[in-house]
Amino acid sequence: MKNSFAKRLSLTLVVILLALTLALSTVGLLSKKEPKRGIVIVTAFLSGGLYLNNPDGTQTQLWDPLKNYEDFPVQDVVSPTGFGISEEVINKALKGMGGLTEVLKLLDEENGLMANMTVDIMTGKSIKDISPANPDSPNRLKYGAINCYKETYDSMLKRYGEKAEVVVFNYDWRLDNDANANLLEEFINERGYDEVVLTSHSMGGSVVGCYLQKAENREKVVLYTPYSSACLGAVDALVYIEDITRLLGGIDLGAVGGFIDVNQIVKDVVEPFLSSLVSMYQLFPSPYLMESGQYGANDYMITVDGEPITSREELIEFYLSRPFAKRDGEWIYPFQREENGKTRLENYWDAYMVEVDGNKVHSMSLVNTVYFIGVGQKGMEGVSYVTNENGEVVLDEIRYSTEGDNMILEYSATSGSDPRGANVVRIEHGHLNVGINFNALLMERTFLEIDKVWG
Image 1 (cartoon, rainbow, N blue to C red):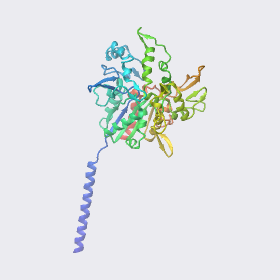
Image 2: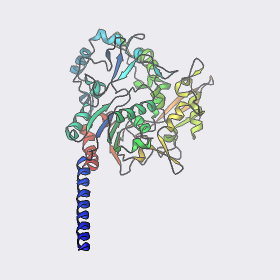
Image 3: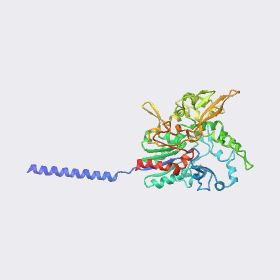
């Protein structure tokens, strides 16, 4: 009798425990939190929307200045079939800026647009109080300057809006990319994303590269698709800092309309502006590009009087020797030394590298990255300097290559990895096309990769 009761009691307890376990499991399944997903589109050099913060707490649209042109057709102007601005677009752009009189004000050396956007190159800080646009900005600046990433945003939202929050991350592209990476980290954390798909264009890849250095950031990224990213720098940046007139391709534009001297504007307005930007120096070709497969046995990134620069130490010494590295005898921000004895530029190079098993690898190689790169376009690959009769080392010749998108070389766009690897999408278009023309050039493969991780 006792044994029978004990058996019934034991069986009852087992049933209760099983029922309780099943109930708890069901509750756990029902209460399991779905991961919050985000698709973050990171803007490029010159393409992030910026506001001027006024003393009264209001903001003025600063970059870009097309205040009354909400539907600027950037994909029509920079289309896969070519670059062109119609008379209609020009007239609408002039109207959007407030007319020709306002355009001329923007070019004023002391109070114009670029004067307002100039950076104190000795401190690395903006002279004016400027903030990037955010996802809640009231106008199209939230999509980047002149609607650069609205097409990307709209297409992403249409396809994945029910699965993820789609946002454009604008940052102050004039300033330190490593600092902007910290802002990207804060942005993603504040929005509470558990899983992130990242895309970037051009210099946006530099920001993302620094962001990915931290393991906790990499853990959130399920996919990264950089479009023509300047992962390892660009020879163009060095050349334009050395000689801004080369930005015009050697063409003497003279006076436009008989009263605007474009060459003089470039010299007096554009050159001081560009040479003040911290990010321009961070776009200089890096030692990792120099050591990559971009250069063969007899090809060199930089030579001086026929002698190639072959080491990181030689490269930074060369940069420090250039006139642009100082103002009034003092090192400018990128070349000032920090506590570890390295220049800020050297520390920036280290900010996108991660040590793995005693070797330094680019942070992008440690996440699920699919590179989209432009190829087959003529661009700067190497530069030669010579000592002239006055004993000055001056830029002499530029060597060109079609192994890139006309601005970013293949190995830079792939962070030093094989540009013909399985995770590389090669597109025969120029730099702007591979980044802005999302629907025509990038959408199909990008969506294929997102579907792999999110179903």
